[in-house]
Length: 161
Length: 438
Image (cartoon, rainbow over all chains, first blue to last red; front, side, top):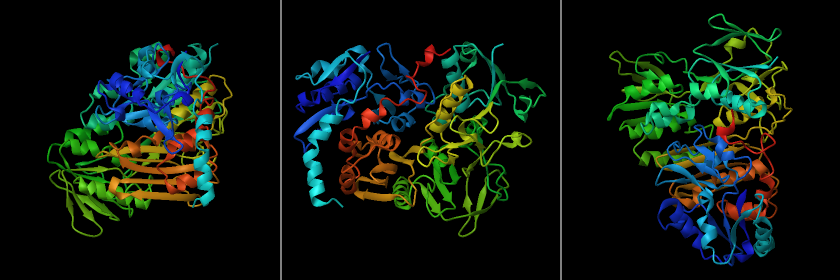
C-alpha cells in the first residue's frame, strides 16, 4: 500500500502540513487539530513531522468496542464518526500516540490518508512528506537519535538527577 | 467432521474469539454461542445513559452478523454445568452441547456489599444493559444521585449523571477516590477538580445501612449525617461469573487460571475476558484485569488457538482511561508497584500530573492527568502506552524525563520505539478488515 514516508532531514519546520491537515480534517486552519504533528528536536533547530504509521496490528481498530474504526480502501485505519461514541479506548490502545481525541466533536480523530490524496504530502514544499508505495517504517528514529545527541550529552554532563 | 466450538458468553471476549476463529478458518467449523443476553458492548453504556447514543447503538453482533459469521446463537440461555471429561456443557433449559473446544467467557457481575438495605428500592447497580435502563429511568433533572464507590466504573458514568441534570454525591470507603487506578497525589487533584465542578465527594466514609420507605433511599453512614437520595448507584466492585464451574474440573483462583495460550488446566477448554486470570504483560504472573482491552486480546488469542494455532500471548497490559468533567485520567501497567523507581511531577496550575515508574531504563507503568483540551498533557497517552508496551530501553533519556516527565515524544522517537512496535502483532499477522471476516 501507499504510505506517508517521512524524510526528516528535509523538514524545515514550516508547519504547512499541520495547517493543510487541520483544514482537510476539520475544515479549519487550526494546527492544534491536525493529526500530523511536527516535533522539534535539538532545541528547536531540527523538526520532523509525525503521524499514524497505519500499522499492521491496527491497535485502535481492534480496541474499539463498537467497530467504529475500519480499514479504508487505501489501507488507512479510519474513524467512522457516526459509530464513534468518544470513549477514548483507541487513544490509549494506540502505542504510537497517533489516535487523538477531538474536544470539538467528542470523537476520536486520526490520519485517514485523506482518502488517498494526503494534504500534508501535497503541500510540503521540501518533499519531507511523500506518499509512496512502501512498508510502514520508523522514519524518524535514527534522525531523532542523531539530532538529540547534543541534548543527551548535555544532560549526561550535568549528571541529570 | 467439522470441529465444533462452543463459546459461553457474548461479550467482548466471546465475540473477539468468534471473529478470530473465522479469520483463521473462513467458516469451516461449527460455532455455537451461548449468551444470556443479546450481545452488546458494556463499554458504551455510559453514552447510552447520557442519551448521547440510542439504545440500538450498544448492540454489537446482531442476527445478521451472527448468520454471516455462521454462528448458531443460543441466546437467553445460561450454562449451568460443565463435564469437561466428556466435553459436554449443560444449559439452563437442560440442553446438552458437545464440543471439541469450549471458551469460558462468562464475564463478571456487579456486587453490593452486605449492607442492610443495599438491595432495597431506589438502589441500583450499573453493569448490564438492563441495569443501565433502570438507572436511566430513575434519574430526572434535579435528582440527587449518590454513587457508592469511587472506582473506575463509577467514574465512567459520572459525566452522564451530570449531563442528565442530576446533583451528584460520591461516597467512598477508601481514603481516596479511584484507589485502584491512581495514586494519592493524583487522586487529590481529581478530587479538587470534581468539587470545583459541583460534585460532592466523601472519602473514608462507610455506608452502614440504606433505608427508605417511600422509594427515596436514605443512607446511614458510620460517621456523620444521613444522606437523602433520589437514586443510589452501588459501584462497589465486580466478581467473576464462575458458579457454574463449581463441580467441574476447571482450576480457578479468583478467575479461571489460563496459560499463555489462554488454555485452562483442561486442554480443550479456554477462558477469556473478565472471567480469566491470565498472564500480566509486566509481571508475567496471573492477573485478573477485568478491562476491555484485556478481554479483546484474550478473545483474539483464544480464538486463534481454538482454531488450531499455537499462538503464545505476550500478556495483558493493564490500562484505564476515563474523562470526568473534561479532565483526562489514565494509568498503565505497574502504576502502583512499590518496588519500582518513580518520578512524579505535578503542575497544579494546569491540572496536570504525571508519574513514571521504571525498572532500570525501561518504563513499566505510568499515571497521567490533564485537561482534555490541553494538548500538552493529553496527546501522549498513546505514547506512554507504547513505551510501557514495547519496554524500549530509554538510556540517557531517563534523566531527561526525570526533569520533565511530560516531554515524552523526543524520547519515544529517538529511542526507536516505532521500529520496535511496528513488527509486533498479537496474532502474528496484519489485522483483517472486519467486513472481510465471515
